[in-house]
Length: 205
Image 1: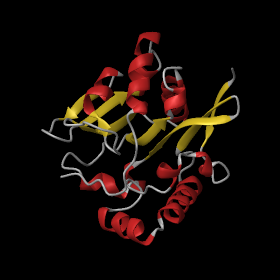
Image 2: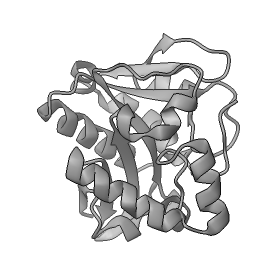
Image 3: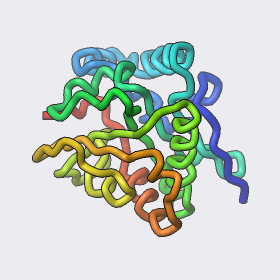
Image 4: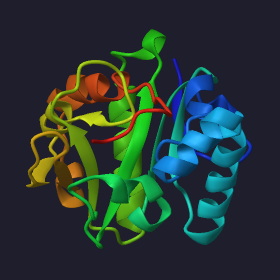
C-alpha cells in the first residue's frame, strides 16, 4: 500500500470530498458564507480562495492518497486569509502562527495513520517557511462532525490552550513539539481528522 501527501492545488482540489469541496465556512466571513451557500456558489468561492492564497502566500493544504485514491486532506493558512477566524470570541490568532482550518480522513481510510501523515506534512512545510506554531479554535461542546475542531482532540495531539473560553478556546501547537511526535499520538490524530465534516451553515456563538 502506497501513501503520499501532496500540496493542495487547483488541479487536485476536486479530490476533496464533495461536501468539503463546496464548504466555505472558513474562507468567507459569516455573511458571505451564508450567501454563497444559498446561491450554490460554494465550489466557485472555494476555488477562488485557494487560487488567491496559493498566489499570494503559497501552499495552504495537503491531500493524502492511498494507492492513488484520495483519502483525506487538511487546510491551513495565516489568519489574514481566513475571514471566519475573526468571528470567534478568542480571536485573533497569534501573529507568529498559522491557523489549522479544517480537514478530514475518509471513513474507509481511518485508523491507518493518515492523520499523522497529514499533520506532520503541515508541520514540516510550515517549519521550512519559518512559521513558529499552528493554532486552532476548538469546540468544548463538540458532539458531531462539524467545521470547528473538538477541543479535547486537539489537546490529545499536543495542542495547548492559550486563550480559554467556555465554548471556543484557542489552542496552539509549537512546531518544535510537532517534530517530536511519537507513534502513540497516531490514534488521537486519526480521531481528530476523522471527526471533521464541514458544514457551511455552522456559526460560532
